[in-house]
Length: 115
Length: 113
Image (cartoon, rainbow over all chains, first blue to last red; front, side, top):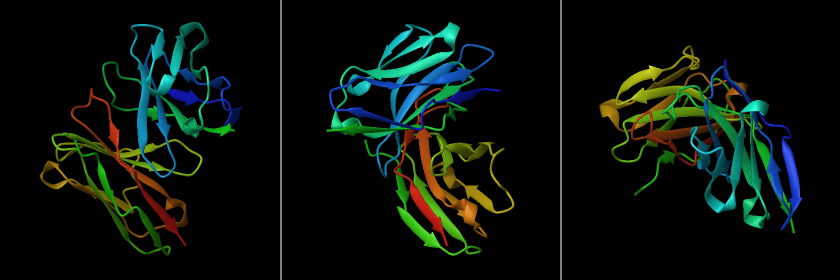
């Protein structure tokens, strides 16, 4: 069965510092992978997705993620944190290619940005 | 285009009472999802509709939860009777098709006393 783990339920970074949010997945076949962001009292927004084209995926708001098959990882990074990046981040996987269906979400990582 | 609309935004009830949530998806979106998001966890799919038919309700506690999507547009999710463990945010999402990205509403935060 597909599953997603996110190391670190809470991450704090200083404004301007590197953001690194970790995600590992388990899958018998290469899945589609996603990162979603959730701002307080709002729904989820799609940040970026991996669909087996390029292993380095660029998303919105300066975020990017790299798919590493050998490590079964899909870590999210941003070179310089901004106060507005404070939010909850979810890594997700879908077992069905060409689909956003049956998405399985990880437990989430709460990002705090310190001025 | 208008986003996914949900109401109410907040609801507080006592255990054993009933509650209903409403979702209006983006116009033209055939697929509708209801998720339960417990504090500190990722969203969990409760039920998925394709037009007005149920595609997946394997994780819906059917003894107390029910959902319908009449005419393939709006949807309601009901809990009767509510339990303390039902305290969560209930998110509605919609997509044009199952192979298209999901768009989420802002959710309904349910507190059970």
